Image (cartoon, rainbow, N blue to C red; front, side, top):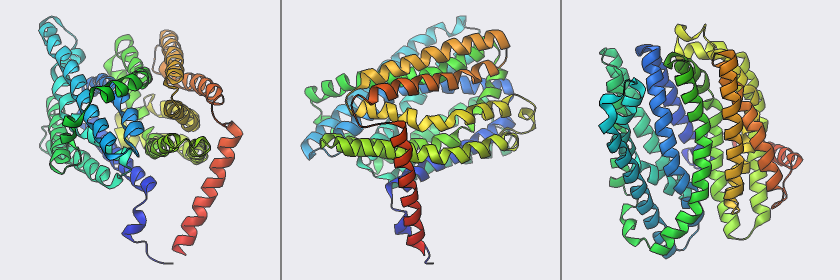
Length: 444
């Protein structure tokens, strides 16, 4: 057996996975520290802010992430410059509009007696602006399939965040205000790195064309609607818990769902690499290749998620203790994790259904799919909270929504490509076995 070399790690799937492992690993550390230095009420306020911020971020990402990958990947130099210039223009314009809305809301702060809403108004604008350059940079690097810089930038952003928070905790200065401040500072640090190192390609802003800008906008409006609707599921859950129960319950629910990152890490990684591969295949009119990539990633991840879900179900208690400490052990957090993990094996097929529909120019169908999921999630969650009066009412809503969206997306996707549940599993199994053989042979 030979010793692995650094060059062996220069694989796009590995680097994408490593990048998401980094961000999620640091995320777990940050959550673990915050659970121990903030009260449940303060932690609930922080989660409420993140939910609102994520919804706004979904607007920016939804409009431009898929559009950037689709139109920039494999494009000729002049066309690529026009696309990036238009992406930057739209990103800046959208950020400015949402910041103006937030600035206008500051007028109403004296008449608001809700601490969560006040904190959102005070911190949203500057936080959203601070993350703009590195968001655009990540879209570009994903389209270029250049994952080493993404890994470094994530290390910079999340590493500096956890380092500062740990120092503040040691000095007993880890207040809610300082947590918001650290978030902005580390975003600015990462954005500065993106610009100074040249990864952001900000100069391309001056290469934009009106035609290209409108093309991106027309395509992105459907993926924007999909992204917002998809994010609304999580945001709706947050709002329902926060206003129908209390922020303390929101803290318990989020500690339980945070460990779902174990599923989201590989899912985000392979969606990123799969999306660029499918976009290239579609632009080359190779629909057979596009269908193969979609089935390959969805099938491989589904098979991998089965044992992961079983392990997470059995180890939910100790996992919650490690993340949140004693105060969350006797709460609903472990059972929330168990419920969600059982249905997590459906996530890969559902996610790749949506991405594939976007790539083959069917974003409207994907939008309807997410609308159905949102409607199911909201109605089941509301009734569940009304009847049960605890967070289990929300926990059962997510699996119901996932099943509804999966079936709708699957039905429509089969109209356009050679796609079936059996094909997904058989392709995934074959690719998983081939990958295992390559790894064994590589290091034997």
